[in-house]
Image (cartoon, each protein chain N blue to C red):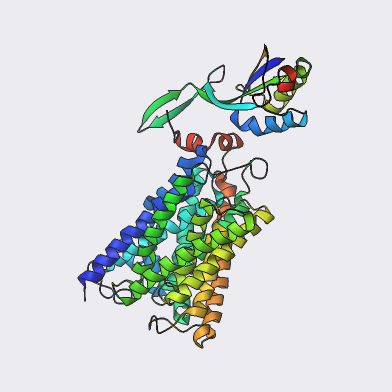
Length: 407
Length: 112
């Protein structure tokens, strides 16, 4: 039965998630050098087109279509065939099926965009497009089906992922690690200082991400109800706690709190609360956000120690945040908050933590291995990297014949 | 005293700075500049329209040193800024009248 309130809420939420893509583009764009800002923004922006095409003709059906052995959706809904105004009660019984499909489309589009930060300032545009398309088909769509698709094997086992700790943040984090290893460091990495060219742009992007995240998480309730309000609150509390703790830890450790630290902590908190947003109480949400600020700060330090050129810290923030948040669902989830969820360790059900850990291991390994194989194959056929001279000139001129800042 | 101006590729600045520090240079002034010489500019395209950008981004460094130091300084800049491609830049060497350190009023060699 269609409900106008739920429908309006899901449509607005879908638009909010779309806004996260330009938000992410600015978040990343400010952190790169000014010769690479357009190329970096473009790698997020263009995925709106690329992934939406894929989603309509292939991806939605592979992810959410009629189940094939728990592993993938069939192609029965390819081209959005039969996906219209009538609700699909398997997913959202009170909103048009098409609204659900569009809402999920935005998740599919932002996930490969998140990966690009790990290998910023060095990929050619063509190979990047090939990778993003193949990755969406071979990694995002299957994992999305396992966790969220009707009949997906992890969903059937009882794994919980409210809004994408596994489907979005863990998959992009694992792929980011594979990409850093397959593409190698930037020429200047470790030889010259590479500093952000426009932090106000990054802070603006962070604000847009935070705003959009309400659609991402609260919208995942797929109804304008109490669970949505709980997810809305948890999202905000996770983000604010992550920002506060990152700043405090940085203040203590490096002597001063920084704006990039505030932005990083907010995104870490938001990413980490994502899988649990609709399953945990406000108090737990604050705890999860605080832990995210602390753990992700540490992860970013470890990266520097290991000399990985994960340029914009996708592994340290999204990968680690996704894993941490997914495990903490197994601790903090409560049926009092969401009767459709489960109880976690803290509420007398340690088995849930085991299930969450299983999902982290299986999806983490799957996403890493498939991403790695894809990248190695693309590298062999067409190469991944800019020529050294093009890397010196920057993405903007060499890949797009533009300059971001004119006369 | 000599006043030395070098126009170099922007991405070579770090190498030049490190090289100069290694031969004992204690200060320099750096400026982002644009210009053209034998190196061609590049083409930019906005909504399909082509624009030729004749002026290429360069970095200009300025230093003042004692006469005896100048040949070593020029050699060091050449070595660190060299790629072998057209567009490596130029070094200009001028005689310098005097210099004054604002804080102390020292002049000449003591001021640089």
